[in-house]
Length: 433
Image (tube, rainbow, N blue to C red; front, side):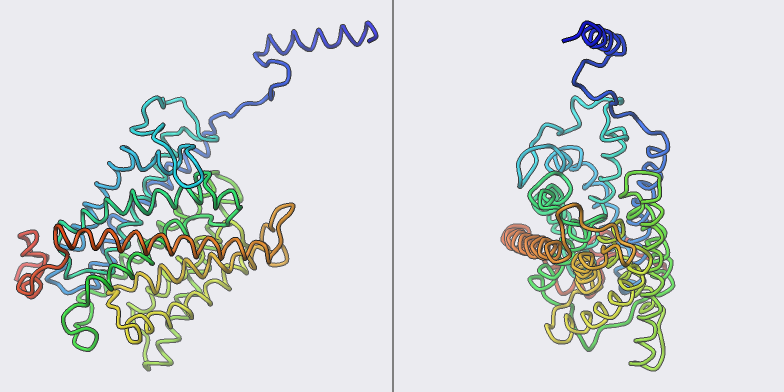
C-alpha cells in the first residue's frame, strides 16, 4: 500500500476516535427530535380525548337515559385499567423483541428505561404514552356491543383480560416486529390492531351475551342524539392524532394522513345521509355521524399509504358497506351488537385494510409497495392479516366470555336491567327526575 494511502487511513481513524465514532460504525446515531416529540405528545392527548369524553358521550347518547352513566363509567374504568396493565406488561408484550407471536417481559414496568432512552427520534416514554392511548380506546370500543345488560364486574374483567390476550399479541404481530410486520402488512393506524380486533370481539360478545329485551322490534330510540353528535365530533377531532400521530413524525406524512382522514369522514357522512334519505325519506343526526365514524374507521389502516383520492374512495365504500352491514348483523344474523361496533368499526377497518392494497398504487397518489411488492402480493398479505386477526380475536374472546360466564356471570338480572344499570350497578342516576 502506498505511504500516502497509509497516512490517510491513519488520519481518518484518529479523527473518528476523536469524534467518538469507531471505524466501521455509522457516523450518525438516533437523536431526539423536538418537533416530532411535541407532535406525538399532542397526538397522545387527542387520542385519549377520543375515549374520554368522546366515546363516552357518543355511546352514552345512544342508550336509554337509565343506562347512560353505566356506559360512561365503563369508559372511565377501562381507561384506568388499560393504562395500568399497559405499564405492567402489555406494552412489553406488544413492543419488546420476544418472538414472532408475542413480545417478552424485558420492558415490563419500563424498568431500565430512562428519560433519555429513545424509540426512533422519540423518548421511549412518549412512544409508550402514545401507544397506551390506543390500548385505552380499543377495549372501550367493545362496550358498544353490550350496553344495558352486562354486569359491571364482568365488563371490567373481560376488558383487562382481553387487552393482554388479544390486543397485545396482535399489536406485536403488526407493529412490534411480529410475523405480520415481517410480511410487510399495511396497517398504518389500527385497521387490524384496533378495529378488526374490537369489531370481531364485539360480535362474539354480543352473540354469547344475548340480546336486549325486545330486540329488535321493541327497542327505544337513543335518548340523546345531541350528546351522540358531540361525542362524534370529539372522535373526529381526536382521529387527527390517531392517524396523523401514527406517522410518528411532524412532516408531510402526518399531514397527508390527516388530510385523507378528514376527506374520508366527510364523504362517508354525506353518503350515509343520502342512503337514509333514499331509504327512509329523511336523514337523521345519529345516522349521519355514524357515517362519519364509518369513514374514519375505514381510512385508518390506509391513511399513511394513500393520497386524497384514496380517502374519497374509502369514504364512499366505507359508508356503503357499513350501512348494509348494520342491517345484516341486526336483522339477518339477529345479533344485538347494540351500537354497531362490528358493522361500523369492524367492517370498516377490515374493508380499509383490504382496499389499501389497491389504493396505495402511485397512480392514485399512494406510496407504492416497496422494491419487491406488487398490488396482488400486497392484497394476499392483507387478506392473511385480516383472517388471522379475526380468527384469533373471535376464539380468544369466546374463551374469555365462557370462562367469565362460569365464574362471575355475565348478564345482569331481569329486574336490574328493567330498573337500569345506572342505579343497580352504580347507585347513581344520569338525570334527576
